[in-house]
Length: 384
Image (cartoon, rainbow, N blue to C red):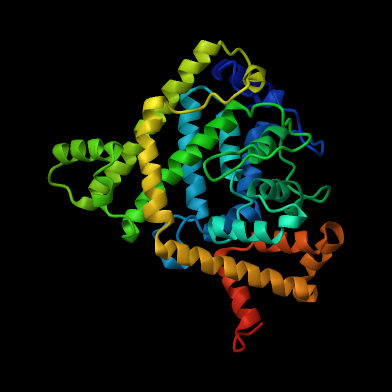
């Protein structure tokens, strides 16, 4: 059986000097005796997987609302894909794979039902009361809202995983500054890798779902150099395979070339900067996890196409607009009659106030739970 001493020795031996070692953690909010044969970050990963918030990701929207079809990615499948991509990158760079996995699995715990439209609705409602940000909500989930242990609320994650949640950033995610989580410092390289893995996952898997839905056409993609070069190579090599397999191979290759580019670019920067510890990473004045300039130029038209043809497609806009109305109406009813809330939510009003307690309740809903609540409150023939 591995002991904590042996785990430390293994991390020191395998992980790079600039990796974040579990034995260097800044600790937990509530002191606990660490597990005898799991590192602190392995323990965090397991606590996240066993949380209610993680399970609920299965029925939360990525792009397509859950009832649109079983094939489309949900927030849970997206999270697992991010974790897989991030682990691959971390292993190649000799970063702390357990920390990367824990941050990746937790990075979307604060998401609302109905994807970003749900977050926009809550943020508008709470604009004069602190707003709503899913990174901050994710921190509330792991620090307060999960109820698992007799001695404290939340799941008591390590400082580094909590920092990774609030400093997560991408084209759709804005990192936030929280006192006590070193807002003046750069995030760990492990956090930065999760950010890019998230970008790789949603660009390429949203592309896959867009093609499957018919909202995107392959003819839309032919003009893109990043798609066209790969498609032609695969068509030449596998001239007899059907279009569905060809699409899968192209998407897989798109992910592979981006991951490879990122690993090479980060390794080059690490060597150039001469990083000797995880503290060196945090003292830098900018992030070092990024694609090469060439890859960024290839990716930009793809991102623009996704925005124009998929995210702004009239069907997606309709779904998003309808979802916002659901959230707004639910909030309005709960606010007017807090007695209609479940007893546990009413109890939280005493600690957090009515608006924040309602926000926590709605943010924790799955798509179908929110739809069921809407029916119960507005359909006269629906049982309450």
